[in-house]
Every structure is written in C-alpha cells, then in structure tokens.
Image 1 (spheres, rainbow, N blue to C red):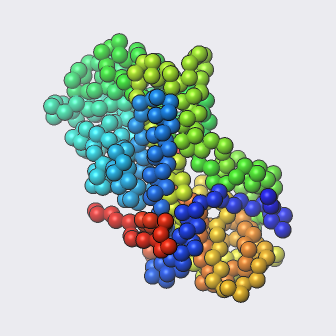
Image 2 (image 1 turned 60 degrees about the horizontal axis):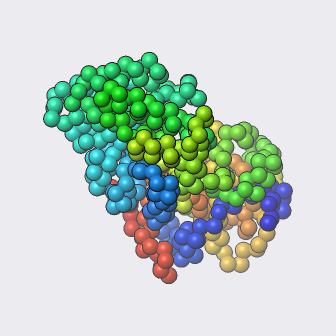
Image 3 (image 1 turned 180 degrees about the horizontal axis):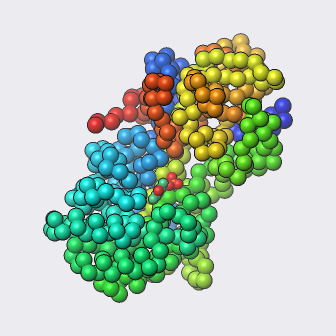
Length: 457
Ligand SMILES: *Cc1c(COP(=O)(O)O)cnc(C)c1O
C-alpha cells in the first residue's frame, strides 16, 4: 500500500464507503452545487440504520437487555431522529429545543433521556409531562425536579443519578459520593413522586476498560439503591463509542510523519489533540468488547454481571451512529500559488468542519472532483481556506496531495462529516447561508433519490 504521497507527505484516505462512492459517481453533486449556489451536506441515513442495528446485535449476542439513545447534539438533521423513531430507538436530548424536535419527529417521550447540567424548571416540567428519563446532575437539580412533580403528583419523575467518574475527578458533570448519598436519600423520601431507575455516566476518551470498571460500579450502586426500596434496574454508559475513519497503516504513518512543515504557514498542531482517526474496534465492536471486558477486581464479564443482577444497559452514542452517514461538499472559488503548494479558497467556512475549532484539524483526505476531463494526473499539494476575511479560517491547514490540479469550479467533498463535523458550529457568519442538508434516500439505484432534510418548527 502507498502510505505516503510522492512529496513525502502522509496521506489519510478514508475507509471504503460504497454508498458515498455511489453518490459521487452518480453526477448528482455538481447539479446540487449549481442548484444551491453554495456548500451543502448530503446525508446517508441508511448508514445510521445499519450502525444502530449493529449495536443492537452486539447487545443481543451478549444476551444483555439494552436500549440505544441517539445523542442528538452530534447532528441537527431531522432525518436521524426520524430514523431513530422508526426503529424504536431513543434520543438523548439536552435542551427544550432538542426535546421538542425529538417529539415532533416522532420519538415517544418515554424513549427520550434528558442529559446536561442544571436543567431549568421549564425543561424539567416538559420532561416529566412526557415521561422522559432525566439524568440528574446534582442534588439541587433533583430538588427542582421533585418540586415540579409536587404540582402534578399523578406523574412520577423518572430519574437516573449521574455519577462523577472517579477516573475523571475534574469533570464538571455528575455527583460525588456525598452528593449521591444525599440524592438517594431524597429519592427514597420522595416516595411515589420519583421513580429512581438507576445511574449514569459519560466518560471523555474512548478507552474500554474504564467504562467497564465504572459500569460495574454503577451496577453495585443499583443493588445498594434497591435496599432503600428504589427501582434501580438500569444504568447508562453515555457515549464515546469510537469511529474509525482511516486504516491502521495510514494512521500510523501519518502520526510518524506529522510535521508542521506539512501545514500552511507552518501551523503547528499537537498530534495528541487529533481525534484518533483509526481504531481497531469501532462502534458496535467496541460495545461488544465492553460487554466482554472483565471489570477490575471481578471474575465475570460485564455482560454477565449485568445479567446476574437484572440491569438494562442504556447507551447514548452520537458519533458512532453517524459513521458514514454524511459528507460535506464545497466548490472551489479560487486557487493561488504559494511556495511549493497551492491555496484553495472554497465557497464555505470552517464553521462547517467543527474540528478546526478545537485546536485540531479534521484530517481525513477530502476528495477533489476534477471537472476538467483533460486534467493532468499527478500530485498537487494544496491547503484549503474559507471564503471569509479571517486569516485563521482554514478548512484544512495541512497540504493535501490532490491527484489533479485544483481549479475554480471543482468540488471538494469532505468525507464522513455527519458526526459533529458538519453542523455543530455552523452560523451565518458574513451573512453566508447555512449549508442545506440533502437526504439521499436510496443509493442502490443508478440514480440516487434526494430531498431536503425536513424540519417543521
Ligand atoms: C455528548 C454526549 C454523548 C455522545 O457522545 P459520543 O462521543 O458522540 O458518542 C452521550 N451522552 C452524553 C451525556 C453526552 O454529553
């Protein structure tokens, strides 16, 4: 395999994705670029269905009762919520607007989990009215929730208590042991007003063992809570199932060759700040590995511990459900020569590629659709800037090795952007339109069917 380009710059090809390739091959993208007159995203919701099905299979194969909530913050499109609703999956929401969106696009209230810190009383009230499971972040928030229920005693509040992870003691989320003890006592005192269903956590990073250890700890907490007469029959392990964007060799050689000389203006990124673009066990495979992992100090796999004490495993994946579920398309507006490489300007901004806003860069190689059939083949390094007046507004600082010389009017397609990249940070900066989202309903035919993502609000 060719690991580095002819110029010695490491390449980062994405893993094969036949559905996205079919869209590229169909010729649809130039037509849409013409129709919209600006950048746009296309969404492949069949990938969402497939990722969800794979996670459910991992649960079933381990014999574990589980329930998957799609963490909505990872993408704002309606179609993913619609797919979750159609499949009977849940949605993890963290604001009144997200809660409304999820209900409005067909998810049942009891299939929602409400996360986030210090939720305001109006949001808590809405959640209780719809039977939403609330992940409570502090004793104060629990009090607020109990006083909401006091006004409508017929409907209990469904509660998970969020735990401050021992391994991440500086997290601003979750309760420490003393706060948990207070919260548990309040739940017990609240009687029928509160249905305490269990505990939750969400860990930074992607390591499996700390999740297995903490999940086993939460199972123990459930057993203790049951002695107080509480239901405590489920735990949520949050999100953090990883996505693999590129193959192991490409990622290894990328890291080995990482050098600020390969970036426009000598821009220096810390390799440790990059997302780990390759992992051996992404998505559902990471879930299977977690269920098979043996928590520290235990002689059973996590799956067996959960089964043994009758605990349902809840998870809230965002990025992993969106693996290969979309891409972002820009048009080249101009090309400039620099010393040994070119600077491309595209018709959008780095607000549509969120990684740029976290001292990092979205590294998977974008695909250049060269419009000129006579374009010479070779290796043409170029960095990618935005159509704005900010020096720092670059979509890609890295000098990417393109297979043909970029020209005005060519399309640049950033792959696999549905998880967080495409819309987390978008705003109408410079009064530029927010890129529309196109849903590709079928990619098996010669010609993909497309429509706009529908929001009714
Ligand atoms: C962001 C978040 C998630 C989703 O995380 P991913 O890494 O996208 O899977 C799940 N749960 C909570 C509480 C979150 O804040």
